[in-house]
Amino acid sequence: MNNKKTIISLAAVIAVVAGVIGFAAMNKKADTSTVSDTSATPVTNTTTDSTGSPQGPVADKPSTTPSTTKTTTEYKDGTYTATGAYNSPGGPDNLGVTVTIKNDTVAAVSVVPMAHDRESSHYQSLFISGYQSLVVGKKVDSVHLDAVSGSSLTPIGFNDAFAQIKTQAKA
Image (cartoon, rainbow, N blue to C red; front, side):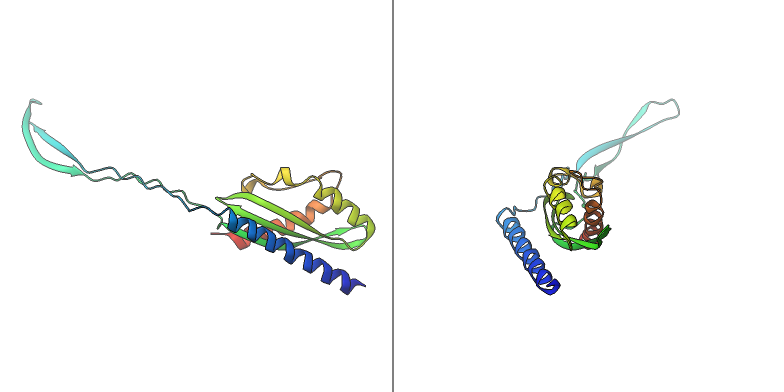
């Protein structure tokens, strides 16, 4: 019976991952990073004598200090999946988490419940009903969940999976 649940859970994770990847592929936009370069501007330098009076131009040197603005990211854009573990009163439990990262921000997230008993299943369902608004649109480094919708242990599994995903996505 446990093998059947495991196979069903894995199939669900694969289906979610395929859906997220398909969604991300449809919404993929060209990467835009800006580099601003200022043109060389001639600068006239003058010297002064001992009285402080200008003595005329010494040399015309162009100023070539370009201003470069480039956005650097800490995490690679992409979709990542991990399984988080935590202990419930019924024993060890798992939670499948898939996250799409874009510009160091969580663009999408999905969770696949992998509870081993009815009570854990109930709390995972509560968690799933309320976690997305706490994650989607947030900077990756700001995501850490505590109790969500009355579920206080399931977020531990989510945070475990999310930590694994951050490691996978490090640029």
